[in-house]
Length: 120
Image (cartoon, rainbow, N blue to C red; front, side):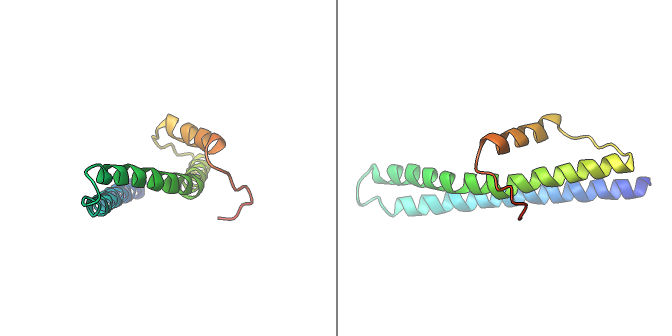
C-alpha cells in the first residue's frame, strides 16, 4: 500500500519537524530567562551576571539531563523497539540511523538511573 506508506512518512516528517521547532522554542525560552535573571545582578558587580549564567547553566543541565535520560530517552528507545518489531512483523523496512538506537541503549545502560519496574 504505497499511498498509506507515503502518508505515514509525511506524517512522521511533520511530527519530527514540529518536535524540532518545540526544542528550539524551549532553548530560546531558557536563553532569554537566564539572560534576564543574570542582568538583574549587574548592580552587584561586573562579574556577577557571568557567574549567575554559569551557575544557572549548570543547575539547568543537572536538572534537565537526568529527567531527559530517565523519561524521554527511555520512551524513545521503547517506541523504536516496538516500531522495529512491528516493521519486522509486517515485512517492511524503514531507513533509520543504525547508530542512533545503539547509542541510546548504551546511554541508558551507563547513564542515569534506570527504573526497571515497567511503570511509565
